[in-house]
Amino acid sequence: MKLIKTLLAITPVAALALGMASFSAVGMAHADSHSDMADHSTMHVTKSPTCGCCGAWVALAREEGYDIEVTDTDDVTDVKLDADVPGEMWACHTAMIDGYVVEGHVPFAALAQLLEERPDITGIAASGMPFGSPGMGNDPTARYDVMAFGGDAGDGEVFYQVGL
Image 1 (spheres, helix red, strand yellow):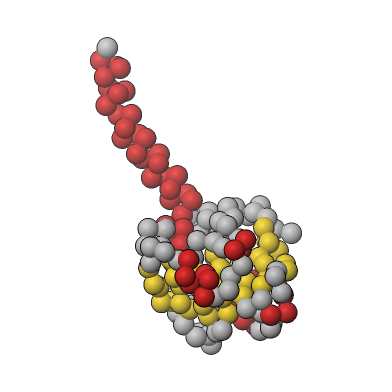
Image 2 (cartoon, rainbow, N blue to C red; image 1 turned 180 degrees about the vertical axis):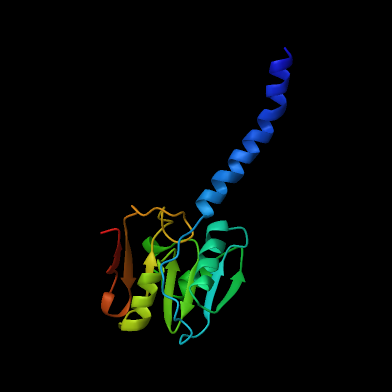
């Protein structure tokens, strides 16, 4: 009986510890190495104040050398609509840099390519929240597409492929 009481007493603590560990694992992020971003303007990121993965992406962007301003809002819809992000490409946060829209957990190699090549597009997006993308855990086997939209990309075309 004493063993059962002990187990019942520590179970909530163990569950909390496990939950916190898994939350940090999801928030664990990886950054590609592109550290010479000082030549770019400030990146403006609009996100939910309670979104940990967006906060992780912002932290990684800062580690990459980007100057970041964050606007926290409970409703990111207007920013996405104003930026003409196609509905099927929406993700959890929206960033603006050097005249481009960067939607969601875009890897920094794709962002660097965008800023270097300067294509005639509105922006790029990592739709949804791809596991293994920056801010969504470190998974070297992650595979997903970063899509371009607007301008020459029209309704959308693959801009960058991760893991292929």
